Structures are given as structure tokens and as C-alpha cells.
Image (cartoon, rainbow, N blue to C red; front, side):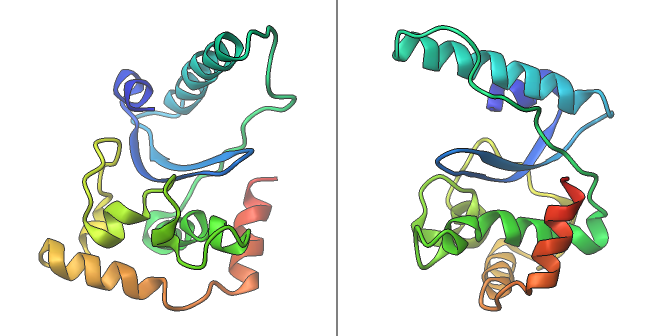
Length: 156
């Protein structure tokens, strides 16, 4: 992901790797960057899986899904939705307990070279300690079902 982001100029703000899919929140420098990033990721991942499991062929039967996000209103909502995915799937009871997500960086301050803080995240506090506290407070409230539904509908 890091190499694909660097090659396309995309900034990754949040992610979660589930067992059968991945969610990412990215800012591209131009609209063509996201398809280039996905092609790069797809090629590398398919080659890795095929080599590891001594198989051939494609892995996915569908195209990736993407949606534009209004940063001022929806960015943090989308981050919450992404990072609560494993909680909703009953894999963990707290987003910090799921290893394959970016919550630990934005909510706990752990280093992750893949992530670039978005300006909306940066506005959560005057310093890192304030941002971490304010970000974690967003996860104390459950997402309402209408918000989750709106995000899912945007991807259909």
C-alpha cells in the first residue's frame, strides 16, 4: 500500500483489512490516481497470493468500489465506520484490539508510515495529545444505523 500510495501521490488517512475485503480512506492528487493505485495493489496482491499458494488466475470477481467524501462533514464519520468494521463484525469489542486497522495510529499515537493525517483530523486538537483524546472520544458513541446506511449506499 505504501509503495502504491507513493507512486500515485495518494494520501492514506484510514484503513481496515478485514478477512475478505479492505476499506481505505484516501485523498488522491487527481481523479485518475485511485484507479492507478487499485491496479497496482491488485497486481501485487494477486501475484503474492498466486505465488504463496501455487495457484494462477484472478482473485476478485468484481471491481473495487469508491465514493467521493465531503471532508468537512463525512471524513471523520467514514473513518469511524471503517475502524468500527471489526467491532460490527463481532471480531473484537474495541477498535484498538483489531490489529489490521489504522485506529491505533489516530487513536493511540502508534506510528504507521502508511498514514498521512488529514486536515480534518489535525483540527481535532492543537497538539497530538489533544487530537488523540478527541479522536478516541468519537468512538465512545455508536454510529447510528442511518449513517452506516448512507455510507454503504454511496458505495453501491
